[in-house]
Amino acid sequence: MLQSKLFYKANRNKSADADSVSHDLLVRAGYVDQLMAGVYSFMPLGFRVLKNIENIIRKNMELIDGQELLLPSLHPKENWQKTGRWDTLDILFKLKGAGDKEYALGSTHEEIIAPLAKKVIFSYRDLPLSVFQIQTKFRNELRAKSGILRTREFIMKDMYSFFTNQDDFDIYYEKAAKSYEKIFKECGIGKVTYRTLASGGTFSKYSDEFQAITDAGEDLIYICTKCSLAINKEIKEETPVCTKCKNDQFEEKKAVEVGNIFKLGTKFSTPFDLKFTDRDAVDKPVLMGCYGIGLGRLLGTIVETNYDDKGIIWPKSVAPFQVHLIQIENTPNVKKAAQKLYTDLQKENIEVLYDDRQTKMAGEKFAESDLIGIPVRLVVSERTLKENSVEVKERAKEKARLVKIKDTIKALK
Ligand SMILES: [Zn+2]
Image (cartoon, rainbow, N blue to C red; front, side, top):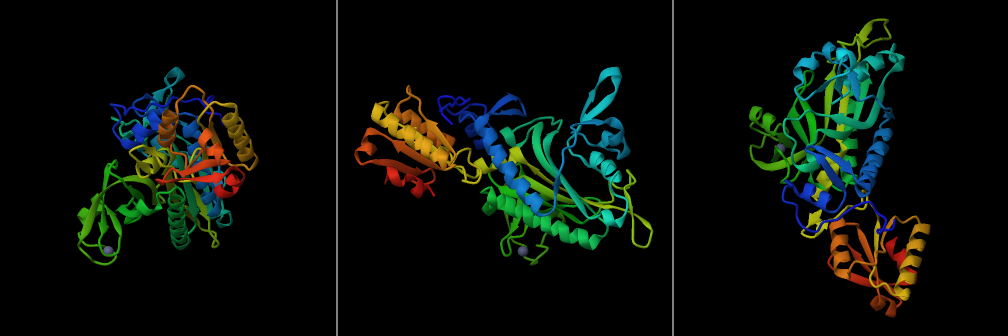
């Protein structure tokens, strides 16, 4: 991609109204744009990161037999009345359509997937089953803050599992938890993310949250100093000692919830009469589980835990491009060498953003490159060409090195 053509606008000055590091950096580097409080546009740079995160999640959901589908955002009021949540879910977006008919904008999809599953599941032979979607959701938040960490409209991966019995369900639930740990590790926040015990739903003592430690977090978690078990604040009030090792010393940390998993049991299958016929010809309710990850929030959390005073430092796995190629002078020599390198990188399928802009000074290009945070920077200038070389610098490291132009691709791989 040529930077001269890229749809973005970088701003080197810190924005006054940003209330978190990720908000400030993502807006200033041209990844996202705020339309109104809690609603953001993803610019091409931000969209590329979002797609990378999406692909990591999709791959891992498919590995635990999740089938991808797409459910609607616009829901009939009746489905939400059936579970009572039309009146009790305070963040539910409600709207009136033509003829005063009422609708909800989905903040979650149990009310849609349970009646849909009823059309497919009849016998124990139809189970187990897991389906997931990556889709836009809505929350009618009283106040939206912290940039893309807490928004009114957001993209979420939600998976729903269906089982005939508790034992198989419990095994799958643990498998999903492991899959979540893998996803956060692949996204570069594995070291700061804790599976955290949280107050349970109706059908289990605990649910599990995945909490990433960062000062931008709105949650408080307690980490056992002996065994590293993490517990959410509300639980901590119930259990003053660690449930695993009985230690009573905890470290208090601010954290962002990047994912959660719940054992729903029969909470949603009962109101929608979702049953299956067992081997003994008896009808039984299907056991459900749900598993969520907010993609925008995960993107914001990656930034909150991967930056320095110059800008973002993307992990390779989610970076918008792998290489930022910068042409310093506009002399025929430098232009020709940079353009050839650009073509060669593309031929090798290395994703490259090429700063070909002729009106920007070197200092400005470097500052913007650090702000955008692509993992590797390649610089071509009169100085490097004297050595038949290109300057290679990793964003996360201090020092640059010269590499012969002919060896560039090899050095990157
Ligand atoms: Zn412990």
